[in-house]
Length: 80
Image (cartoon, rainbow, N blue to C red; front, side, top):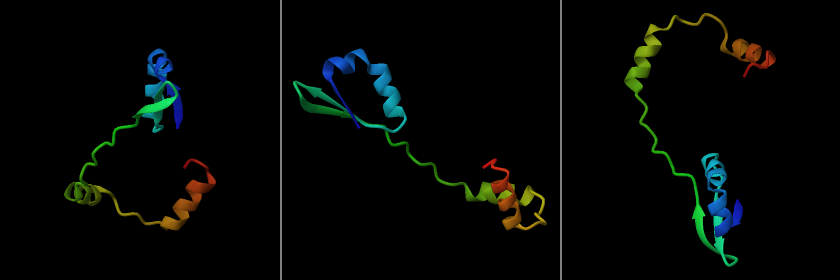
């Protein structure tokens, strides 16, 4: 968590907002005392569309290989 004076916050607002967007909190002080905290806004979670997910799964061809082998291959190739 970064702490900045009010004067610094005014001069560097864009940089501070970038930090907040990346998940960090910023405390703003006046005369050395904390007066405000700028924090990221919690985004509301969207409900999962289970019916749409089931429809998508029905359209996919069945997987004939071993999932464990696929995961090992992906891991070894370092793509994921």
